[in-house]
Image 1 (cartoon, rainbow, N blue to C red):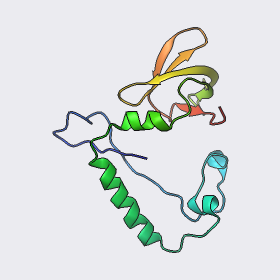
Image 2: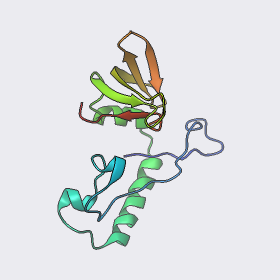
Image 3: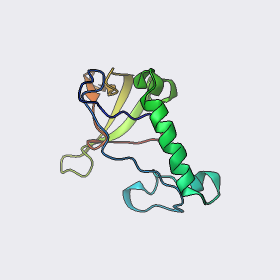
Length: 139
């Protein structure tokens, strides 16, 4: 994954910033809303990560390499996503009184990294935030 933090004089990345990044390392299970979505390195590898400090050193090194890379994050993301060209189901405004389940077709991704979706009525929208949309990842 790639993450960018805008620089004050940068015209390239001036609309977003990272507040925090979390990495689940040795968790064996999750609860609540994320129990079927979250995963940890030990759940994937079947091994407990003993050298957490070394892991984070490598993680920060990779983060810096990607941050200073000249490649375009949206182009890279498009290479690895399975969503584009598929129908997905999502809850709009999850947890709100007016929450609704929608089925949309993911047409593309904008230059800013937003999902460009088409609703069943033919209308197009850009989805900006996962806080307003809970996507069913089983598409």
